[in-house]
Length: 446
Ligand code: GLC
Image (cartoon, rainbow, N blue to C red; front, side):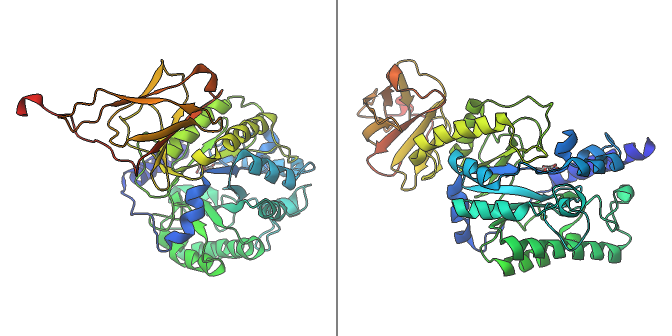
């Protein structure tokens, strides 16, 4: 009991320190390689592992003592992958409008989904699945033109040189040689993944238990870039080693500082498959989160967990199909955009075309008669409903000839053009967007 309390306290202190320590800017030595990532906008995260057998939290369920380690590992016997259809997964992902996917090759429990030579702990050697599950998915993604991402936990609560039972000492601080053996093992597994599957992106996780020096993050990154110089790495190899930031679950309220970022979020409340978790967000709610990310210039990485037989839960499939409908209708207002204009001009998220001459407005509500835009100095050339084509009328009201404050622009929106989820209005301007950002004009001083 005391042990658990001390551990929780240590973890809490560690999390607090991690939260409060300012993180150096995301490294950008090769910004060209980020192009596809910046334009991708939507990615799909897949947490697949033995935790789907009982339908419990991935790895954390034994770490937090909700289940005994031995019983957790018994789930290996029920992990069949008998209905695994990687082509179907890839097609569903492609149709959803996602441009990249990330699969958990190994979570904190240490169970590899591929035939690793560095350890015996894999579903290939220890479960009825009996075969490599990473490769076929990577091949299927490549066939569909989807970028390949691999999730890899740098900490491993099963490895003999990384024993979860010694967690109160925060792992081998006092035995660096043994820890070095462990990092060698990580290097070996990652070399296997890189040489066999050549991922476009690594999604690391679990870095919080050690410093980048202890993980040998710099050396690791060099090695991985040696396999693929265009490789993108998320921000979890320690501060300063990632190419993009990864806020988790909570939707940012204002634009994150990093140029490149991705919100990772579960469809329900679980990363892996949990049959008892029915708290799925609705497609419409998730689309609203998605356009919020677009508005702030980021990506959304939506996660679901396949069942132990490899089938995709029906709820997840429905959500991806709803995304397919909306993203295919609104392509031009998704992939060819950048972050929108600052809040305060329109009561809705916005984005801009790459040349900043088209302003896209995302409406998840019906406006009362007309939509108002304030502080827009440009002239409006044309307005239309994206994916529907209807041309709309706009007018400017309240422009005083003696004032530099632009008038209000109103756009009338008829009832019959609304999308059932989010309606997108495109506003073509007479040049790159030009905004009035002052606080108003004092009449007395004129
Ligand atoms: C957290 C959790 C982990 C999950 C990950 C996904 O780091 O530890 O279980 O896989 O988030 O972002």
